[in-house]
Image (cartoon, rainbow, N blue to C red; front, top):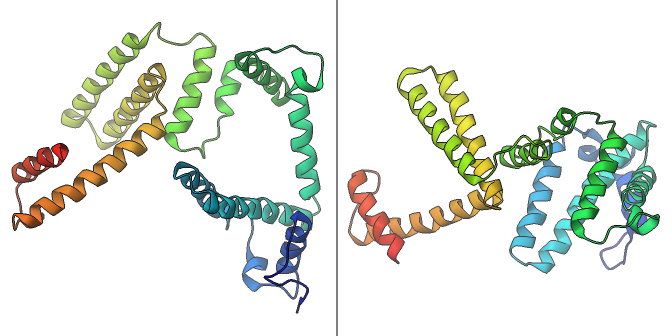
Length: 265
């Protein structure tokens, strides 16, 4: 047993590294020893979203806890690689420090950058050289497929726009949206399931493009729309109960009237 570690102690990153080493060791935890990068992949994703949720709710106490959970994931994956003899946590720290120094030449070098826009342009150019991205297509392909679909679409479109592949204004994007809507309707009535799926994807992609022109983050917009739907649905359910209506057997016309009423509440 490792009696040196107690809940009334005060710990640092050094202790976290040691605790993970213990948990992954021969006398550690069976579950921790069994894990690999793929088995805990979704854990990393979930912990990241929980950090975002704490930020959105301005929950400082929860943010402290969730940041710790994300740090745990970084240390856990680093420990696996150290056991394999490829790299360790120190190498991760070394790499990110060097990246920050390299991509901030206006701070650590003699490059001038007076505005945030200049900083971002420098960052992009340095990143392209660092990653060996010789073409604009390379920059599009570098956007991870594991990103949420709306986020990935927005990043790809933004990078394509830097190559000059963009509408002159939002009107062009809106016209394209209407075109994709018509194509989806045609696929819905006369096309196959595969064609319908493809056209639905094109429509969503066009919606993301419109959101870019309107300076609206599509992930944030859809999240707020979903939250609003849940709030109004709850009002509809309450109104239906007050009227003695069973939502499962009520007509859509009846429910739509309640929906309109809920919008006024």
